[in-house]
Each structure stands twice: as structure tokens, then as C-alpha cells.
Length: 273
Image 1 (tube, rainbow, N blue to C red):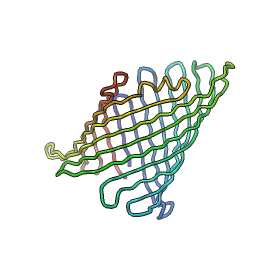
Image 2: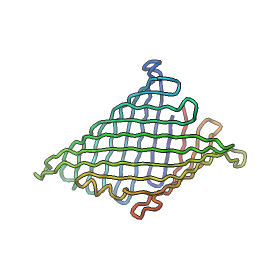
Image 3: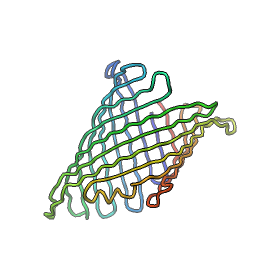
Image 4: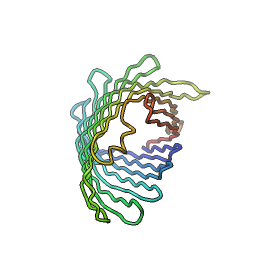
């Protein structure tokens, strides 16, 4: 499956596939995602690849393991920071046998290796240890042609940077950060006829609460996302005659929070092959 998405910030792409190459009982799946974005403070390139396999415990429950490798580079015109890392661990997906209630969860551990060049004249290297825990529950309720999808999700991530000495002989102490996020949302889908083509209208509203804690400079960097806020989403999807899917969407994030605001428009095309 190929998905290309462009908006005012840059370009994003993803490629995913699933195969029975491992064994019939442990199908293998692979996903690669990347993005390039620009803002007034600099440019960011991001690439992430994930490989996993799962086993069917029943018709409604799957247990698997996954490995995620990522690379990010940030250039602000004066300095540059880039890092590569990995996360690995188990995951579970499924639904209730008699109800359209879907759930998923994962627990991953890993580390990263980073290089920072704050003034473009010298480079320092440091390592981090990290962890990610995530859970999501999504329901589905059909009311005629309208489909309601309530969602509850929670995630917790930690990143601990080890102490090191920079190229100027300065001791850089260990830093750590923990970020917890809880989300409660309701998405809606309904078909509409535009001319002779059928489109799917998608809308959603959600409340998000984020809280960060830790020590060092990383806390100051994450402070603007702390607190409770609302987000609105609205979009259109259309499946073309050739089997591709064209989409347009927009969002506004930061309702009720004075220190944070986010918004965007996106146009995407996805095709399975």
C-alpha cells in the first residue's frame, strides 16, 4: 500500500505490505514512513521503518512482536542534530467476539545514538534509553448510513539521555523526560453524492490531555504541549475507478489552550498493490 500526503509544512509518505513469507501462522508485515518538513526555525527529515509478525490466537485476537528503526535530522541553519534508534517489543490487536469493539496495545523498549553540532563547528555524540507503552480502544456504531466511532487512547513514553562530556570539555549531565497523553474522541463517517461520484465525509472531535515531567532542558522544550485541549478534524475520501483512494482533510488543534495552536490541510492519495 502506498500513501502520499502533502500539506503546507512538507511531504509525507508511507509504504506498507503484508506477506505470509515467514510462516502461515506468523504472517510478516513491513511498513516504511518518511516525512520532510520546514518551519521558521529549520528543516526536519524523518524516516521510520517497522517490521513485525503476529500469531492468531483466535478469530478475534492476535499476538505479535515488532521492531521499529528510525532516523531523524534537524537543521536550524546554524546547528544540526541527528539521531538513529530502535524500539522492540510485543503487541496485541483484537476485538470483542460479539461486538464491534476493537482494541490494540504495544510495549516497546530501545535506545538511540545521537550527534549534535550546536554551532556547526564541532560534533558531540550521546546515547539515550527509551520506552513506549500504548493502548487504544475503538467502537463502531451504525445509525443508518452514518457510522459513529468513539475512541479512547493512552500512551506513555520515556527518554533518558546519558551524561557525557562535550568537545569543549563541558560536562553535560544526564537528562530524562516522561510524556503521558490521554485522548477521548468521537469520529463520524457518512456517504454523500457529489455529482455522479460517491464520497465519504469524515469528521471528528477529541479531547486530549498531555503531561510531561523530567529533568534538564528537555522539560522546557515539551512544556507548550502540557494541559488539556480540543481538536477538530474534517475530511473527504473518494475511491477512484482504478482502485486508488483520494483524500482531503484539515484539522484545528489547541481549542481551550492558550499556549498551543496547531492547524493544517492535507491532500493524499493511497493505492494498494
